[in-house]
Length: 160
Ligand SMILES: [Zn+2]
Ligand SMILES: [Zn+2]
Image 1: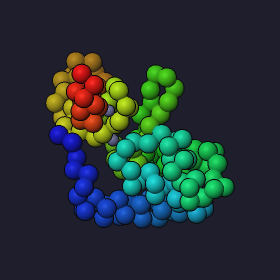
Image 2: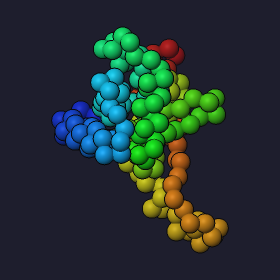
Image 3: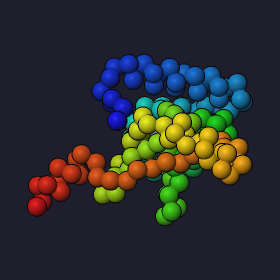
Image 4: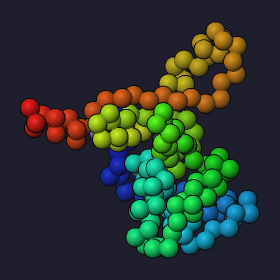
């Protein structure tokens, strides 16, 4: 099941999270310049798991002086606070979830690269068994399901 994106409650949740993060950053001694604040906001308000360059291009419209380094500094700040989930891929690229920093399952489109949250939580199904089997104390997970997103399915059908 995909999270509902059009729900107005999501805006409030994003706003609340954005405020929470600015307070936490302040308390942790990070300086939040207007540019970093804008990057943070763009990330928290996105449900698309953007990459650093996407964030850069998005915020650069508002802050033409923005550098990619500033975007990375903002992401590093969130990582240091444990407030961002980084999804690394084999080609060296990364995408970021600024809404839900804890491990969660994702669906990834193999055609357009869209990434969305799935509500299912694999940790609840298998972590006890795996822990007993291996003796590991488990802390986090990565669970990606690959396929075609609805848009790409529609396009594929049209092209047939
Ligand atoms: Zn797609
Ligand atoms: Zn996510």
